[in-house]
Image (tube, rainbow, N blue to C red; front, side, top):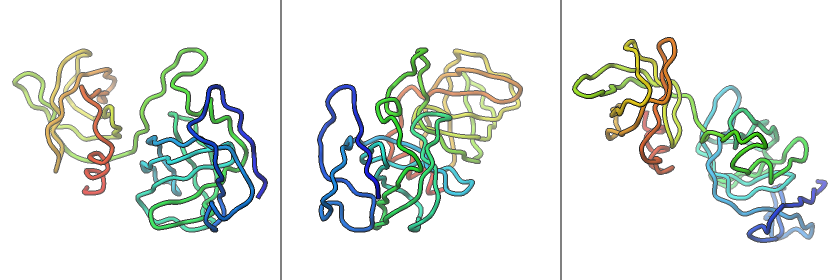
Length: 210
């Protein structure tokens, strides 16, 4: 496989050998620069979107911890920023870890940046969920259905109009109540931001249990 050298603005955490072949990375003599990271992303498997943990990434591919079985040669897309997907192919699998080679080299610095040139802040990666629950606003409780969720918030369907800025408590099946705030409402759907970011393992445990 052709290796791609990545030029980063700022010092990466380390420079080491990294390969996307099935052989162990340390056994290869080809060197590629990669950024070691631990970042939540989403992976598109067919038409299904799931959360994953990005372990390291370079211009040519990445290594991730996934929560569904993948096969060598399988086509996937990875998303670290909302609406910015990078397509690739699975080149090795070891238990829950996979190597993914991108279809074309990427700009890692841009992909991992916290904002775009115009100042737009990307949202945390989110996945579609369909789960019934309740939303408490003051002393009133309203039934809701979730549409998608991330560590930072949730999009819900609700028959009752929501008012931006209202404090709420979200209760979903098999999960603890979560405090948040209404960020937007439009035509029966609303966005709730959580007061505290949900730990990744807690969110994944709830998703996998539903």
